[in-house]
Image 1 (cartoon, rainbow, N blue to C red):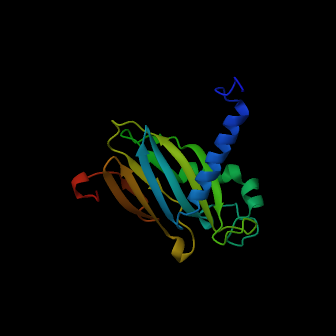
Image 2: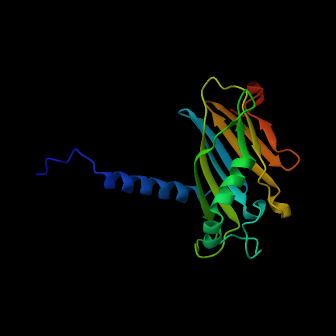
Image 3: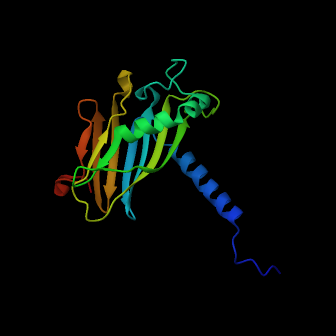
Length: 184
């Protein structure tokens, strides 16, 4: 019998983390185009958002309206910076909360990962506390095509649910105001 069975090696932790990330990205693939969720649990607001590639400036090198893995690799820093600037959760003092643990994945609707993708899946976490009550969300990742110009997002916190549509002219929403009038 192995007496070290109770100890876990660093390699085991890396394997577990890799599997969790893979599972998260596989589940994120199920998010429809221009849809998202923001779930408030355990001191964080967890974001899952599908955004059109055409909403990102200067990353589509061949101008085909889609992003290959190579293009994303070349422009990863630029894509992340645009997300940080265009997806913001603002607190009571109108300060933008940091988007942490940002993960990106190309969304391949045809299940062929070698094809360029027209959508990018965004996963991240905003740190929040229970006493933050006047939160506002801003999303400016609307695409260029007519069918890419709105993003629908559902936010949940405890028993509250709030559905929003973000457009270029309506890109800022207060969260969970008039709680008695929201979906529960």
